[in-house]
Image (cartoon, rainbow, N blue to C red; front, top):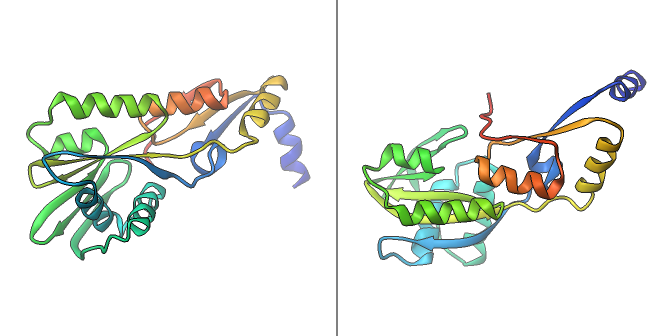
Length: 196
């Protein structure tokens, strides 16, 4: 409306949600790192079977990759989603988990340093590391990335030239968020924001 446009002209601070606004909102799988002696396909099978009932854009990326690899998913039961953290379900009688590092750490008694260092490296590259586990065993990490829209940086630069402070909100971890924020050219990054 005209009133909205007029109000926007008087604004001095704007906050964009990252996914689908600053980025295309079409994340894709970039890396599959199995752990515990399983194959990439086995990790992808468990991950996609778990993610099948999730609405999250990152889940769609995992499912798309499983489809490309022609992996047949297995049915799960007792699916639970904890917004902003992770998922759990029962697959072939075993409890499986998927989500961010802190969520997986709350489920497993011990995670070695190597996957944590790897996850940090992915985050610094602007990728979101997703951890997957079965019972008390880490199955591996799947890294997912979303590309910045071609016109985002220019639009953000124009807003800044108008004297508007530009912030980006995201549920991503701090390192991933900072990498994307730097690419987009925002003034402030607010990471780890839960849906509520």
